[in-house]
Image (cartoon, rainbow, N blue to C red):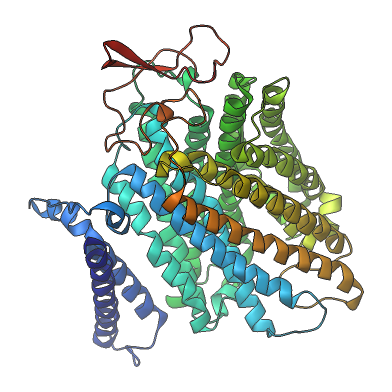
Length: 619
C-alpha cells in the first residue's frame, strides 16, 4: 500500500538519520577531545536534524523533489483514494485536509491535557499530579494549542480554499506546500517526547533563566518550535505569491473574497515576524549547548532581551491566529445573510491596519517586567489604537447581518459566535492594555480567561465555522445539521461559562501556571472545572458527526449553500486541477440582490448549448 510504504519509509529513514546524526556529532566531539562524546544536548540536535531530513525523504520528498537537485528524473507516486492523504502529495486540496485532520487530532490531545489540569484544579491542594507533572502538562497543553491556533485555519482551510477562491489550479509552489505539512509530524514527535525527558517546566513562553538551566525537554521544545516556525514562514511566502500572481482574469484586488484578504494579511505577519521566536529559541539553545551567555546576567547577558525578541513575534502571532478566523466569519456571514458585505473596503483596511500595527505593541506584555516607565505610555496607546481596525471588523459583521435574510445553519452560528466571543475578549483586553490595571491582573487567571476568549472564542470557533462550511465541498456529503447545531450550542454555552467565570479568581489574584491556590477559591474553581469538562465533552459529538457523515452522509451537491464564490461553482469534491476551464471573474463575490450580477464565468464550458455561468446563486 502506498500510504504504508510512505509513512513506514519516513519512519525508517528518520530513525536511521537520527542515529547517524547522534554518531556524527559524537565522532566530532571525540575528534575534538571532549571527554564524553555521547553525553550532550548537541548530540540530540544533530540527531534531530539528520532524522528530520531522513523523514522527509522517506515520506516521498526524494522521489518528487530531491532527485531533481542532482539532475535525475523525478517519479511522483500516485497514491489512490484515501492513501493520498498519507503521502507527499502536492495537491493543495489534499494538503488542506492533511492539515485540518492533523490539527483536529492535536486540538483534541491538547484539550485532554486541559481536562487533566482542570481536574487537578477542581479543589485546592494537590490531587493526583505533582508540581512538576502539572508544569509539564500545562506547558504541553499551551504549546500544542498555540500550534493549532497558528496553523489550523491558514494551513487547513486556507490551503484547501484559497486557490479555489481565486480561480487558480494550485498553490504557487506545490512541492514547498507539501514540505510545510510534512515538517509538522516531527514537531509533534519532538513535543510529545518532552514528558519522557523530564517534562517542560517553563510554559509555552520558555522564559530564561529557567529555560537555560532546566532539563533536556527544553531542547526538544526549541527544536520542534523552530521547525514549526519554518513551516509558518514558508507557508506565508507561498500564500503571498499565490494571491498576488495567480488570481483569475478579472479578479482585481477590489473583488477578492474577504477570506482571501485575511489570509493575505496573515501571511505577511507570518513571513515578517516568525523569525523572532526562532531567534529567541536559537539563543536559548546556544546558551545551553555552546556556553553562550545571552541571558546570563552574571556574565553580561540580559534575560529581558529574550522577552523583547519573543514578544516581538508572539504578539503579532495573536493576529496570525485571529485574522483567519475573522476572515472566515465575515465570509460566512455575508453569504448566509444574503447581503453584500457591509463596508467591504473598510474591512480590508482593518486587516491591513492590524498588519501594520501588530509589530508595535509587543511590550504591553512587559509592563511588570522592569522596562523603563517612559515606555509604558507609548505601548499603552499603541495597544489601544489597534482596537480601531478590530472595531471595523465588528462593524462590518454587524452591518452585514442588519436587515439580512439570515440563514442560521451551523457555519453561520459559529461565525456569529466568533464576533460575540472576540467582543468579550476585546473588552477584557482593555484592562490588560492599561498599565494601572495590568499591574494587578498580570500573571493571573484573568489573563488566561482573556486569552482564551480571543483565541479559542475567535480563531477556534472560526475553525469550526470553516470546517462545517467546507465539509460538503471537501467530502461531497452533508453533515447532520441537528448534531451540528447541538454541538454548537453545547460548545458555545460551556465555553462562555468556563472562561467568563475564570475572570473571577483572576480578579482575586489567583496566579496562572501554578498547581495550587488558596482554599477560599475552591467553589469558583470547581465551577470552572465542571464547565470545562462539559466543554471538552462537546467535541466527542463533533468527531462522531464528521466521521459518520464523511462515510454515509447524504450527497451534498455542488453548491448546497447557493453562494457566489468560485469554489462552489465546481463539483464537490473539486476535480484535480480545480476548474474544467479557467474562470473569468466579472463581478463582486457578495453582490447578492444585484440584478444580473455574476461573480465568475467559465468560457468554453457549455451545457446543452448554453454557456455555463457561475457565481449567481442565492440572489
